[in-house]
Length: 207
Image 1 (tube, rainbow, N blue to C red):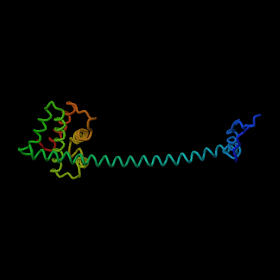
Image 2: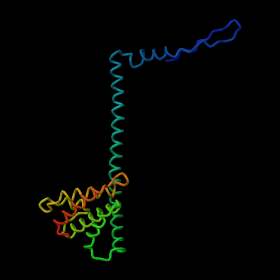
Image 3: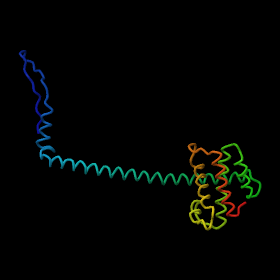
Image 4: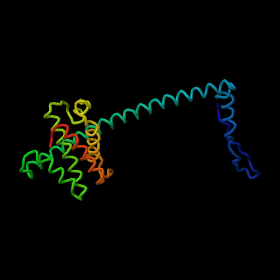
């Protein structure tokens, strides 16, 4: 449809003066003539249905992209946590080699020394150390798994009465190891967590 031309007028001096351009008339002609409203209510419904189909396709695509990003983030987070666990374990081994001269059983004494400190960093060390003792104890008891979490999942309350304590304590350990500055460890929580570890150690014969 050709647009309505610019309307001009000639003055008495012979100069052309721009009067205006009619942009509304072509649009209304398309809308009610060849456009979506040309078919009345049916045309409106058809147009809305087409727009809804386009919206639905875009919404599905957006949802698929968000789901993909979520799965990718979860996988990367898991890999990062595994890497942090390995770094903590290596740091613990290095600490053993450089500073500990007594037998491995002294680890529990180190835990108690750390938890009795007034330094929050020592409380974190106590929890991390206690978690390592728990992991080593389960390994020696023959419970399989690639991580402490997998070993705990293979147990039942019949095998380990303090299994719930083990899970709760391990959860705090993960918050300490992975929570960063956002996780605030209080003295009360640290002491309660060590008590949970001690109950698990008692069931496993570690003391």
